[in-house]
Length: 73
Image (tube, rainbow, N blue to C red):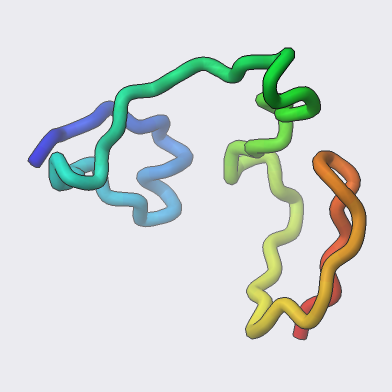
């Protein structure tokens, strides 16, 4: 198992900082020419959310890449 440094915001959301070695992988930076449209801003830190909602089920989705729209229950 490995201890990793996490931002305080993740601790506030009860994300534990110890992971088994089988769950960890080497980070490979995004290859923009091969996978265009994958932006870092798509992953939002939890403290940036003004309102959080829990969805029971995803009913459908439409759109692509950064323009996704989900219908949830």
